[in-house]
Image (tube, rainbow, N blue to C red; front, side, top):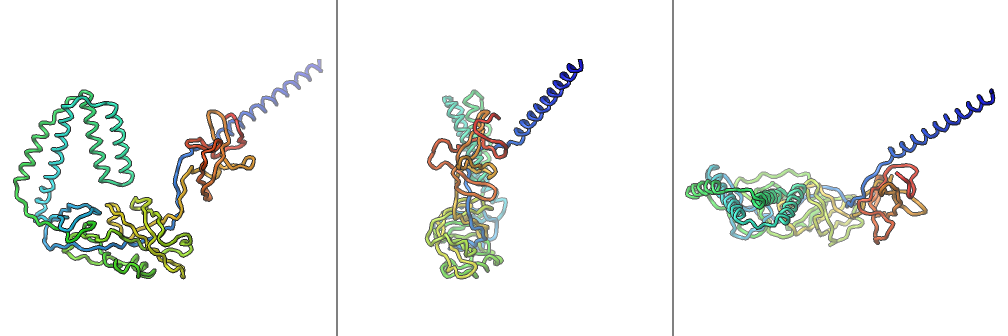
Length: 406
């Protein structure tokens, strides 16, 4: 009887230990899953850059007019104008200026509603094609907004709105624009019959137009660009704008080529060479990968070296540049950006573990560029067994191995 009691007690202890062990193993498995973190392999471009401040030098000539009144620009900043082109108009009163601008707005609105009226009488639109067009226009609007191209964003928004209206018409909505058109045309006729007192301001020469003045036009002489020194650049960056004459209404940039000058640590210029085509970023202006040419590199005999970059592109985002933070791109790498914690070595090969379905798999990587926290990797030859776009990469986890169930 005692023997049976002892046997039952031993069995009970074994069962208890087994249950405890099973519970511990189960909790370890859960803990292992909880500790696992992943991220998708997405394409990204990173740069090695020389970060500094720059001063922009252009071949700028003032447009002057001593007439008092309200000035309205008719040329956009960075727009190419010919000699004799009207770049702005000066109205004697602000009310006249507002009314004159209203005429242009009304003409655009009338054209807009007349186009929509034409769509209302044309019912054979392809709905699928129109839907694709709407989707593309929405993407164009969002991209313009994200890139701070606000004029393009406004235009894209108008086109997107019109396409939505067109889809309403094509799907059976009854839209009548006759009342809007009649009201707009009456208002336009009234404004067109009014008399406005204004003076036209014309450009004396051909070039890129820039509205107004920032007071830095004569800080560095454009004609002596090849003679400037590091000291000249330093003084320009520390200078204050000069007073602008009251009769200055704008500028014309006569030369297609303009310059970006800066002084950088000499050690950072080792890999740069004269006449090399490179890119710059202007992060606070939303300008990325602007192509420029290394027009001149200083003699590299002191701590700072002069760099003169030339550019022959111009648009509204570039026209107002003067003293700017700049990134000179010396190297760029495009690949999958992954944290270094994800990289492991298996059988002498560097790679990462990825989750596919419910299983882990090891995928090799080719490291293009590394920092202390992340690496840019790719598969240069398109071989199998390497990381791919949208792979779910394990960035944190323990006991990882091929075909592990997760």
